[in-house]
Image 1 (cartoon, one colour):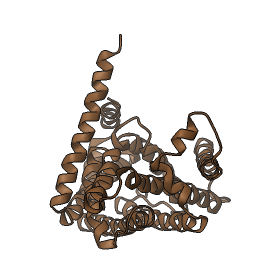
Image 2 (cartoon, rainbow, N blue to C red; image 1 turned 180 degrees about the vertical axis):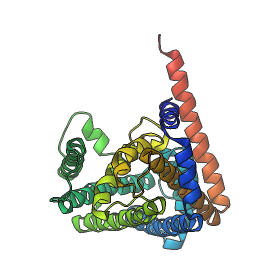
Image 3 (cartoon, rainbow, N blue to C red; image 1 turned 30 degrees about the horizontal axis):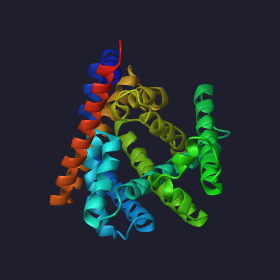
Length: 324
């Protein structure tokens, strides 16, 4: 419902002729080329991170073996982000005989390092933009809230796990296998993983930096170090499916002032760019992932999809049993 409402609002408030004009004026081969290079580069780096995480916390997984694992997640990510994590954990369980929750824990560890990497990148962006054109007070406040909350909260959580602090209810949760990598990882290894995820994020940011000017949107790279981490966090807010609609609305707010051509409707130009990015990168993700899919990948995708479907059915049954 949230996704439908947001997309209806976007469609109602955009200027369709300007959107169509932006699509007709863009260099399509360049758009596809940037999407292809960006997808291939991030896929390669992300697969390396998956290989290192599983090898450190679960069982040895070489880079070549990690490629179909990540490819499996690309297909399931269309359905649901959590289904993608389940799919990767199931793949390693089936192929390596690894415990499911330990495999899922290594992916959760990567998620934690992603948060730390995003907060670090955002902090760098805020520092390097100091003295330039001032950010809107609301944007600045949200940005610093993310940085302080993410870094301090992450450090506090890791400290609680390491010191085994006794807290009612939470103590039992902290002993779960899914959190085990956070207690096993060494400080140097944690910093190494965070650094590698920052490198991964920068690849994505550079790709966006190259993509935006194709639609006449010129944003300083230092400013993207602020905008893109915030957009990433907004994407995971459970308001819409995969952030569809929420991200596009905030992109309007962030990027409309950077539309190079004096368009009568800068929102429409941003809408055209965001739409092209969503479907362009999704297209190449699916095509690239398909090249690495095998029989086991297809079985895992079907199994993870059915698990996700059963969870939805259970939630609906619980909802039906609740009194009005």
